[in-house]
Image (cartoon, rainbow, N blue to C red; front, side, top):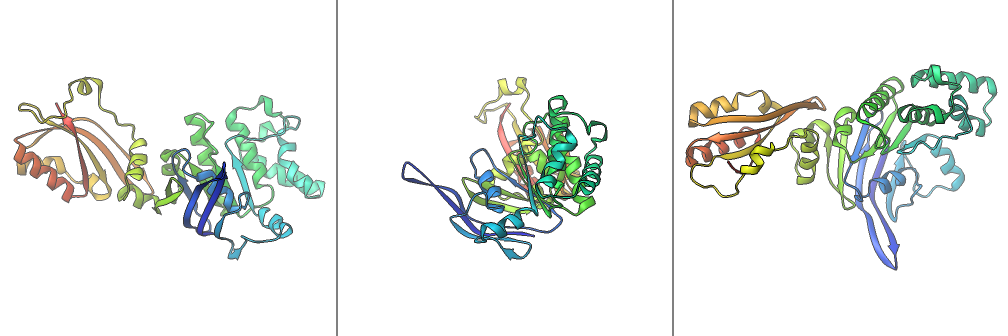
Length: 343
């Protein structure tokens, strides 16, 4: 549905070139939800604005629905943009218009007959769950309700693609989950292709089929969500994955943590389990084979892209040689082991 081939974007600041995007190639399949994740300043917003050519790439090609659109005339580009809608972090609703009239606005601009506008808007209001709010003004809506109006308005032109630019960043966690569920429902009901950018791996985990990780304008990793979570290849991808689990060292352990393997201290380890390793009795096995006792301090498990994954903090008790052998055993069984220090 969307293909970006070798996209680069260079801005100039005080005659100094700034490389916002560097040779990025991604493919967003039809009917899928594709996430682009990166830290602030990574180039995410520039990338998504290149898709509908709000930003013209310095080099590279953009394809939409098997048509190259990089150098279309303004008239033809307007036609393409009708099939590529966009929602933002800020809702940009017209304060003087009701929910109904905000959704109707793009249809009015397109000179759609009034009867068809009424039918279409009522369908969209029902789709986004705002039937009781049709005649309410934006000032009397919550943030989540405003975003639902923005989504309905974006769908008024029957787009093939919906671009989401940090669409849930201004919302609280519960409202974020409800908006993500709505986007997933719309994707499934309408077959709508969704490309979203975010700095939160929780968003990717909840609704995306595929994900690309970008850093400093470069594409560093891309795959299915399940593959990224189970076999992340880069440190930045692993950092994003760890951020979804919120597993921190307890304060009492942190106060005693030493970086020196002194006699009488045991290693405190972070274990990352993915895929099949989650269900294996690995700690029982290292207890039997290497006489290692593991004191589990905290643990958390979750699912992403159909793949189970988890993190665990544990204190390993045993002689140094046995601990080294146990760690090697864990790593041989698809478990990432990080020694955080000694307690």
